[in-house]
Image (cartoon, rainbow over all chains, first blue to last red; front, side, top):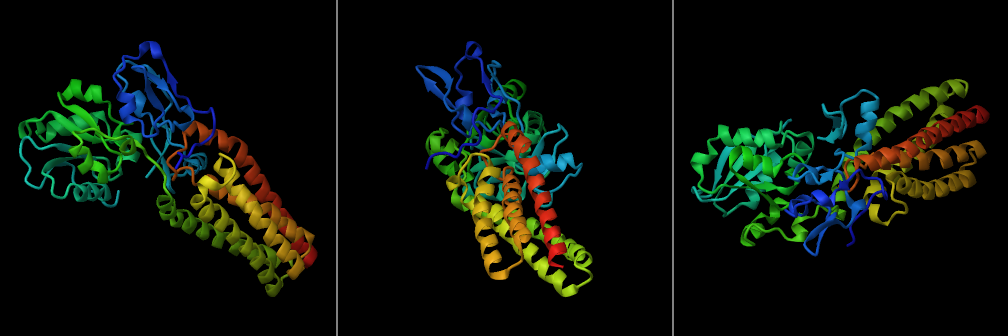
Length: 100
Length: 305
């Protein structure tokens, strides 16, 4: 089955090919097959599949990948707005909601 | 939080110095899943202190992270116990763990294993190589189905409270008639029930096949379909008046949209930026729709007497 995709053209993922050393770590850690290898070079193949988990940025030794990582959870954000810390998501100390 | 395992180094099977090391979280369910997957395999399990939270969520928070891993390697004297300098870390731990930093600080090389513990034996047989399928986090029908009670139960609790409040309200507005208040509350309770069915139960299950990309749009579409039927049937057979039919027509889709939006956190393919964008357009409409629905319902009670 084709993968489920969320909104178009909204994620903060950015790839600076000039910094990429081709270590392929991003290919290993991305759970959404956002990257692909093309003639030995990494490229962003499916940007809208990105869920901004931050795994690629964290594991990119050359700083070629940037993304504002977080969890896409509406109830967590609503709880944060209401100043509560419960339901499926709780707001972490970093200000981003994360599930529990 | 409630079901945790003590952090530290565990052995499984007949673990020897050259056996592989698997890193996991100290959430008991996660630990047990890994142990079950490792049945018949000799190895070591290094349990990190993630405050009893699963790997993915803990990695997002940073508790399943580089610092904790490096400290746990030291405190468990892992380097003295095993001869291999490789650690198999679940792929979903990668948002918290920087493999290159772990190597620099501890000398251990992080090898990212499959997303699911079930795939670990195949991953080992494959020479610590994960296939594309092992690397993907999907969101299958059965996974969505299993999440439905978690969406429906809290929604029903809220709906019961709301129905109780609406009963009190309609009792006053209808001129202190308990039977009329019960009738009007029944109408509202049916609408709440239909919204929950559409937004919290059926939208998660039918997610790939509903129109739109935003969860609110999906919930709204299904809610609207239900609302048209419900308000028409009600209008024709029950004669509650045009205001009551309109109240249903407006409130069911918007409440269903709100409930569907709340499923974003349980799904596995939404992003923070995307949910922010969705909430910016959907939340005002949802709150507005529910307010208009409530106003129409009060008007119906007043007019219906």
